[in-house]
Image (cartoon, rainbow, N blue to C red; front, side):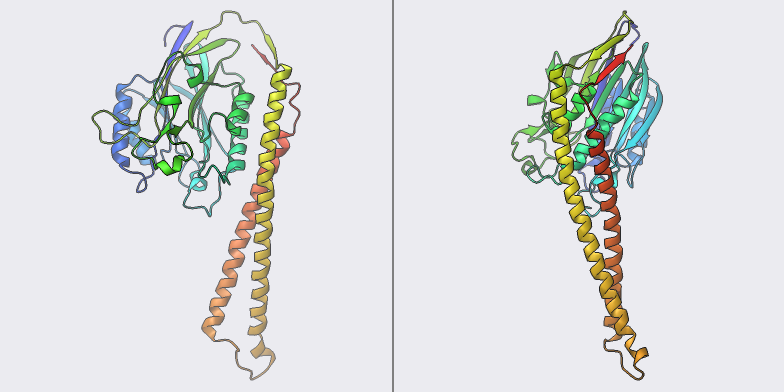
Length: 410
């Protein structure tokens, strides 16, 4: 990467599936990942689902010679799962946690506890400033009845905002990670349309990997084929996206993915396939200021995408309002039951000599039930109020005019 006119950089991205006690062969797979990264000539490594800081420290020690610089992004109850290892020095980092990330009572899915976020690291590649982003969006557990779609759309909206607002001074922008979205899903189109990011798989001059660039494939032994339905062969939900600037042209010379099995090993690195993109950065000698206008056709397409996104967010708004009303109504019923019990408890004091109408044990159990209902419904009411505000905030931002979007670059 010494040539100041042309810089080559190899980007690696992998969802490690590092959930101890739930993921199979977790420790062995981390050892395999570390061995592979030591051998391969990757400049920047973007990892997701590194949920345990001990696993990050294990990789940091193992990669000390090949990738001396690293950063672990901490967020949420069990962390964001995001980590970066690199050969070039990391000059700065920043983490933005998404405002919506599932529901705490859906503990079997676990996304809410993970603190999903986007991490940013700033590198200097030759004479160029590169902003590199790593992220992991909320999973899609059921495509037909995707209750998390509004959350994922808001995450995609916040991701594009974060990239746009933090990359103004960058010559190169690179995003890698598990987006949990198909290429033509609403969130994917929203992200690419607003940021101008290009897909390595679609832009590469040479590809070696799974059919159609799929990153969740049926013949991976860790994959339950029923979870891929209706996509029998697999899906593409992991990406390496990039864009240049007026100072830099960027090309994807080659891209590859792993193909399920790993030679000389009984199982693959993860349930996801790993991605590697070799990018070539060409420094433009013309430094004149350029003014870009989005064509009317692109503006119309952008407005259509944002309108579609607003529709999905409104669906989430109606659902959150209905659930908040249900929580409030249940809480009122629990409060009324508590007042009734207190009235019954007051009978012996109001009528001297009267006996308690209920057995003492039943009385205490009913009181405990009332308090539990009040506590749970109060917490749910607060949670759904926060969800409403986040959805309303995103919908208000999406309403802003986009017809005269232009950008000035140096």
